[in-house]
Structure formats: C-alpha cells, structure tokens
Image 1 (cartoon, rainbow, N blue to C red):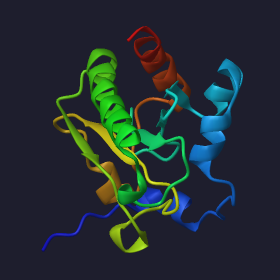
Image 2: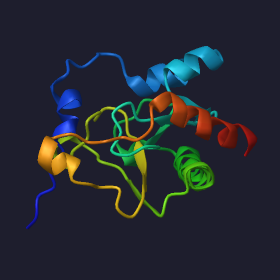
Image 3: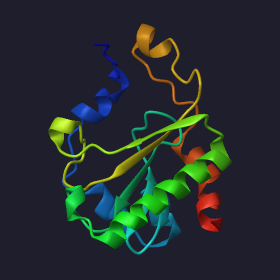
Length: 163
C-alpha cells in the first residue's frame, strides 16, 4: 500500500474550527460582496458551489446543499438532482476556464471517511493536470497552488453567471 502525504493540509487540520457551518454561512450570504468573501461561485435554491479555501489544486470546488444535512440519505430527490447538476456545471466551467486534463470528484461522509466538515455533506470537484504534482511537497513540505483564490474566482465566476 502506498501512502500519499499532504503536509500542506496541516494548517487546516490544526486550526481552531469555527463553530459556524461554512456552507450555511455561504448559502445565507447576500449580495456579490458577501458571496466573494465566502468564495461562492453559484447558488441555486437548493445548492451552492464554492471554492475550497484550503484547496488540493487550483479550482478545487465544493458543491453542497443549502439545507444543513450530514448524510447523503437525508437529501431529498430534488436536492440530489440539483447537486449532481451543479457538479456537471462545475466540471464544464472548470474545463472552460482552467482547461484541466481530468477531475477527482467525490465526497467523504463521516470523520472515519475523512470528512473535514462532517455535519454538512458536500462534494469535492478537483481539477487535475498531468504533472500537477511536483517535487515541492516531497522535498520542502510545501504544496504549490499556482493561482490565488481571488484570481481563480475571477476566472470561474463569469462561466457560472452565464451558464
């Protein structure tokens, strides 16, 4: 079995956790300024798409229901369909704006499965490029994210606004 080390995630893991739910806060943000602060790219009546503040790669998105639910079986049919629709839309917008060569898409449910936020279910959409892993994590314990979140937001937002 091979191990994958991600020491750059330590900042998130050891940070004191805010007691407010990031997805509920993002879903209740009003106006473009609040959405930008919360990294929200798109909001439907049932789901939101937002940038991950601690990304594995540039363009790492999270799609979550607006309703605060912890388990996939708690989603109703409309929420399930809307989340998957927004995952599809997310991959299309990421392809258009960032031109990735592949994606990792999934969810972690429960702390034993690796969920960092286990009380509000969400899906991860992570764009991937051939060679996006380099020597920096191995030699320097540093993950290089080549673009600032604000710049990624500027590149992706028009696609979500126009689709």
